[in-house]
Image (cartoon, rainbow, N blue to C red; front, side, top):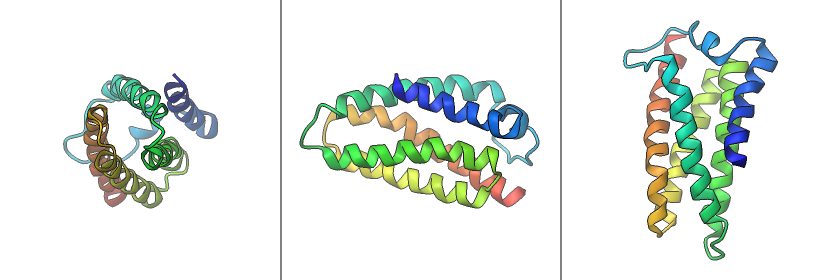
Length: 142
Protein backbone atom coordinates (compact mmCIF):
# COMPACT_ATOMS: atom_id res chain seq x y z
CA UNK A 1 0.00 0.00 0.00
CA UNK A 2 2.82 2.39 0.87
CA UNK A 3 4.39 1.86 -2.54
CA UNK A 4 1.13 2.71 -4.30
CA UNK A 5 0.78 5.88 -2.22
CA UNK A 6 4.39 6.94 -2.89
CA UNK A 7 4.00 6.35 -6.62
CA UNK A 8 0.81 8.38 -6.67
CA UNK A 9 2.46 11.18 -4.68
CA UNK A 10 5.33 11.36 -7.18
CA UNK A 11 2.78 11.91 -9.95
CA UNK A 12 0.94 14.56 -7.96
CA UNK A 13 4.21 16.29 -7.09
CA UNK A 14 4.68 17.03 -10.79
CA UNK A 15 1.35 18.81 -10.82
CA UNK A 16 2.27 20.72 -7.65
CA UNK A 17 5.61 21.82 -9.10
CA UNK A 18 4.56 22.56 -12.70
CA UNK A 19 0.86 23.28 -12.23
CA UNK A 20 -0.13 20.88 -15.02
CA UNK A 21 -0.69 17.14 -15.20
CA UNK A 22 1.83 14.59 -16.42
CA UNK A 23 -0.48 13.83 -19.36
CA UNK A 24 -0.46 17.47 -20.43
CA UNK A 25 3.32 17.69 -20.13
CA UNK A 26 3.80 14.40 -21.99
CA UNK A 27 1.68 15.70 -24.84
CA UNK A 28 4.14 18.54 -25.43
CA UNK A 29 7.10 16.21 -26.13
CA UNK A 30 8.24 15.06 -29.53
CA UNK A 31 7.55 11.35 -29.14
CA UNK A 32 8.97 8.29 -30.88
CA UNK A 33 7.05 5.58 -32.67
CA UNK A 34 5.48 2.88 -30.47
CA UNK A 35 4.16 5.32 -27.90
CA UNK A 36 1.24 3.80 -26.00
CA UNK A 37 -1.92 5.86 -25.54
CA UNK A 38 -1.89 8.16 -22.51
CA UNK A 39 -4.74 6.30 -20.82
CA UNK A 40 -2.61 3.13 -20.57
CA UNK A 41 -0.02 4.60 -18.19
CA UNK A 42 -2.33 4.90 -15.16
CA UNK A 43 -3.63 1.31 -15.19
CA UNK A 44 -0.19 -0.07 -16.07
CA UNK A 45 1.47 1.72 -13.16
CA UNK A 46 -1.39 0.79 -10.83
CA UNK A 47 -0.87 -2.88 -11.61
CA UNK A 48 2.91 -2.59 -11.41
CA UNK A 49 2.75 -0.85 -8.02
CA UNK A 50 0.52 -3.64 -6.71
CA UNK A 51 3.04 -6.26 -7.88
CA UNK A 52 5.91 -4.23 -6.40
CA UNK A 53 4.03 -3.95 -3.11
CA UNK A 54 3.46 -7.70 -2.93
CA UNK A 55 7.12 -8.35 -3.71
CA UNK A 56 8.29 -5.78 -1.15
CA UNK A 57 6.01 -7.14 1.58
CA UNK A 58 7.37 -10.61 0.95
CA UNK A 59 10.97 -9.41 0.73
CA UNK A 60 10.79 -7.60 4.05
CA UNK A 61 10.15 -10.91 5.85
CA UNK A 62 13.32 -12.55 4.52
CA UNK A 63 16.21 -11.92 6.91
CA UNK A 64 18.99 -13.34 4.74
CA UNK A 65 18.09 -11.28 1.68
CA UNK A 66 19.09 -7.80 2.88
CA UNK A 67 21.11 -7.05 -0.26
CA UNK A 68 18.01 -7.51 -2.43
CA UNK A 69 15.93 -5.42 0.01
CA UNK A 70 18.36 -2.48 -0.02
CA UNK A 71 18.74 -2.66 -3.79
CA UNK A 72 14.96 -2.70 -4.08
CA UNK A 73 14.74 0.43 -1.90
CA UNK A 74 17.17 2.22 -4.25
CA UNK A 75 15.02 1.23 -7.21
CA UNK A 76 11.88 2.59 -5.55
CA UNK A 77 13.59 5.86 -4.66
CA UNK A 78 14.88 6.26 -8.22
CA UNK A 79 11.44 5.41 -9.59
CA UNK A 80 9.74 8.06 -7.49
CA UNK A 81 12.32 10.76 -8.20
CA UNK A 82 12.51 9.88 -11.91
CA UNK A 83 8.97 11.17 -12.38
CA UNK A 84 9.87 14.53 -10.87
CA UNK A 85 13.19 14.83 -12.74
CA UNK A 86 11.62 13.88 -16.08
CA UNK A 87 8.31 15.72 -15.94
CA UNK A 88 8.82 18.58 -13.47
CA UNK A 89 12.35 19.57 -14.38
CA UNK A 90 12.48 18.19 -17.95
CA UNK A 91 16.00 16.98 -17.27
CA UNK A 92 15.89 14.20 -19.83
CA UNK A 93 19.57 13.30 -19.57
CA UNK A 94 19.48 12.78 -15.80
CA UNK A 95 16.14 10.95 -16.08
CA UNK A 96 17.60 8.62 -18.72
CA UNK A 97 20.62 7.88 -16.53
CA UNK A 98 18.27 7.21 -13.62
CA UNK A 99 16.10 4.79 -15.59
CA UNK A 100 19.13 2.91 -16.92
CA UNK A 101 20.28 2.57 -13.31
CA UNK A 102 16.82 1.22 -12.43
CA UNK A 103 17.06 -1.32 -15.25
CA UNK A 104 20.42 -2.54 -13.97
CA UNK A 105 19.28 -2.65 -10.35
CA UNK A 106 16.10 -4.61 -11.12
CA UNK A 107 18.13 -7.11 -13.14
CA UNK A 108 20.48 -7.36 -10.15
CA UNK A 109 17.58 -8.01 -7.77
CA UNK A 110 16.23 -10.74 -10.03
CA UNK A 111 19.73 -12.23 -10.10
CA UNK A 112 20.28 -11.93 -6.32
CA UNK A 113 16.87 -13.16 -5.13
CA UNK A 114 16.70 -16.93 -5.56
CA UNK A 115 13.01 -17.20 -4.65
CA UNK A 116 10.27 -17.69 -7.27
CA UNK A 117 8.47 -14.54 -6.09
CA UNK A 118 11.11 -12.53 -7.95
CA UNK A 119 9.05 -13.27 -11.07
CA UNK A 120 6.69 -10.50 -9.89
CA UNK A 121 9.45 -8.11 -10.93
CA UNK A 122 9.50 -9.29 -14.56
CA UNK A 123 6.50 -7.15 -15.71
CA UNK A 124 8.10 -4.17 -13.95
CA UNK A 125 11.42 -4.83 -15.69
CA UNK A 126 9.72 -5.13 -19.08
CA UNK A 127 7.85 -1.87 -18.50
CA UNK A 128 11.06 -0.20 -17.32
CA UNK A 129 12.89 -1.33 -20.45
CA UNK A 130 10.09 0.09 -22.58
CA UNK A 131 10.16 3.30 -20.51
CA UNK A 132 13.92 3.43 -21.10
CA UNK A 133 13.25 3.38 -24.84
CA UNK A 134 10.77 6.23 -24.38
CA UNK A 135 13.14 8.21 -22.14
CA UNK A 136 16.08 7.86 -24.52
CA UNK A 137 13.82 8.78 -27.44
CA UNK A 138 12.49 11.89 -25.69
CA UNK A 139 16.08 12.85 -24.82
CA UNK A 140 17.10 12.58 -28.48
CA UNK A 141 13.98 14.12 -30.00
CA UNK A 142 13.66 17.05 -27.63
